[in-house]
Image 1 (cartoon, rainbow, N blue to C red):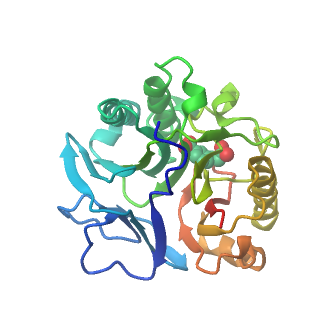
Image 2 (image 1 turned 45 degrees about the horizontal axis):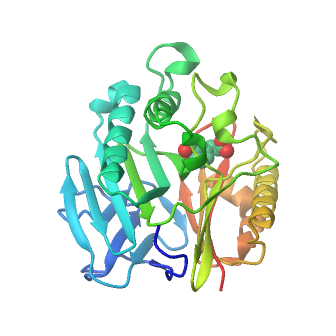
Amino acid sequence: MPPLSAPRPYRLRTLAHAPKELGETVLACVVHDARITDDADPRLIQVPLPVLSGSAVELWETEGPVQIGREAGIGYAQGEAVLFAQLRVGADAMRDARTATASAYAELLAFFARRPGWHWVRSWNYIGDIHRRDGNGDDGERYRQFVLGRHEVLSAEAGFEARLPAATAIGTRGAALLIYVLGTRQPGVQIENPRQVSAFRYPRQYGPRSPSFSRARRLDWADGADLIVSGTASVVGHETAHPGDAARQLRETLENLQQLRRDAGAHDWPSVCTKLFVRNAATLAQARPLAGSLLGDDRACVLEGEICRTDLALEVEVLLQSA
Ligand code: 3EB
């Protein structure tokens, strides 16, 4: 591990539009509401989700020039102390979502295994046809098959639960799977939420295996600290609270976030990137009075996407940074 005195290796800006050209210090340009193109630059991350309001683009930069490359299905950009990697699984392969997810996660795990000293701290999973069922009753649902394939790969290492990245999993337009991940030279500290059962301990009723992610990871740098918070919803204990009531779900979600922030010592850190995912635009209207005050981030991005449990109306993720 590099000395803890290392400065924060990335800078994140949210923008209305993607820049025409990506400079040599750009690690990732995440474009929501993107039409998928075969862009040769692996730093362009295209997320097929309608943007309802706020900034559609995230630009992640580092200090020096990045090294860009491809390894099997992965495209990546790597700086001295931070990297992004992305991988897309096509609609055909996703007909067997479990196997396709397991292959994708195995590739990502191998990518990190080739980089000793690097740690996988954050994943974004965008899953097409997330609620589609391919046989097997409830367990045939694509999200559950995704969770199964991910678990199969990540659980193979002893002590894996303490190393799980923070994550978001959202249903997108189309039938493909997009995974992109953030890697750093420190593992950070896992943060769980006492209001919620850890996702990796969810009981059987939500699927044959539990979702492999941490509620948050805290990274400490010489010049500040970050709390990278996973997609957070109206889940109390392991159950959905207030099914069918978006306004109450948002309030409960904010309670979950407050608790997590308190426990991580991040109660007064502002969010530099807030994303609110809603199942439909009508939900936004219901939740807007509260959404406006959502952590005071006036650039918050509201995206229309499926949440992984059908009784959840919305999900929020934030990146908090101390001054
Ligand atoms: C929850 O708390 C809501 O499967 O990677 C949130 C963030 C959720 C990530 C994942 C799922 C995932 O269980 C769902």
